[in-house]
Length: 268
Image (cartoon, rainbow, N blue to C red; front, side):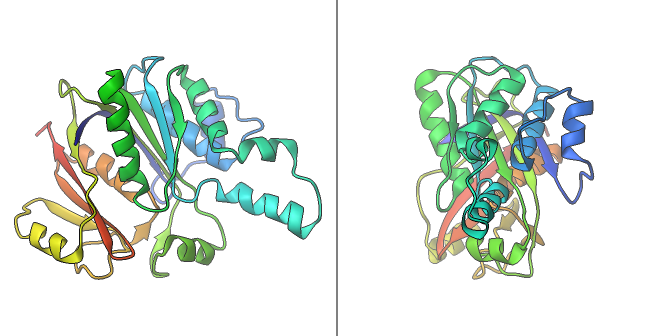
């Protein structure tokens, strides 16, 4: 399967030192009331994308996240189990994944198909598969937003995400504008539904000439890894490599099962 990236946007907390809420209010004139940090991240990504490309109101919108809005989950748990109180109305609304999708769509006037989806593993690649299946039928273009909000204590998130403690957890939001058409594309993304074994990955790597980066969860592969982590790391790396006009093979891993994603730049 192959999709083409027409545009992208990124925010990563260790590089982009800004107050997300303030940026939304002052630069993009967005209403930030009744929304939390997770929703603000998602909104920032879509308005940054709109700065780069014209968005068709009927484009399909897909949102995904590693652990979702963990900040609000912990807050609600404290209300209910810690203090014996009822859930506050806006916390109840914002805890729903589709609430984030609604605010993102509203920020840029999207009126088409709108889905918030997660999976236990390979979250980003599974979202690409869903998009490919959908727009192959609808013949539309799609926007994929990946939101990861880091939260203290980070040791809990590291256990949930099955990531070694030496890796720093970051907040990040990344978007890609995706199409089946190659015209004016910045890069292509290739992926499949196959789950690879360790031996199959080692065989595949013998013929790879581009950069290879693996997830920090790939502890049995002695290849380049970033020093930080968030569930949708490949989404950020795609944008980074497109910006550098470079090619990339990303290898993801979960409990000794592997999936791959290949990026080929088209603007060299």
